Structure formats: structure tokens, C-alpha cells
Length: 48
Image (cartoon, rainbow, N blue to C red):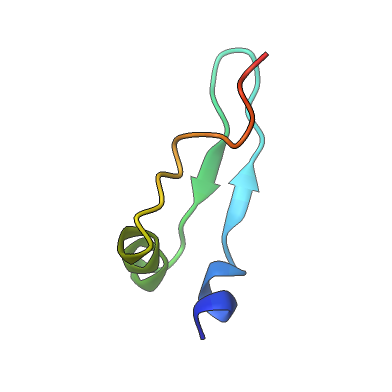
């Protein structure tokens, strides 16, 4: 169930003026990210 709901997340690619963002379409996705203590504002790799 967790993977089903998190699998629907989509990433909007950033550009020079705006960072990448995650599109959260359901409240359950936000709640799961909160429970997993996941900070979606930090990227896995450093920005270059």
C-alpha cells in the first residue's frame, strides 16, 4: 500500500530559476512522507 501511494508521486524538473519539486496529489502521500521522516526538499545529490 505504501509503495502504491508513493509510486504516484511525480517530480517536476527544475530549471535555472526554480528548483525541482514533487507533485503531491493526495493527502495520504504527504502523511506517508511525514511518517517516513523524509525531507523532499533535499536532493540526493548536491546541486552543481
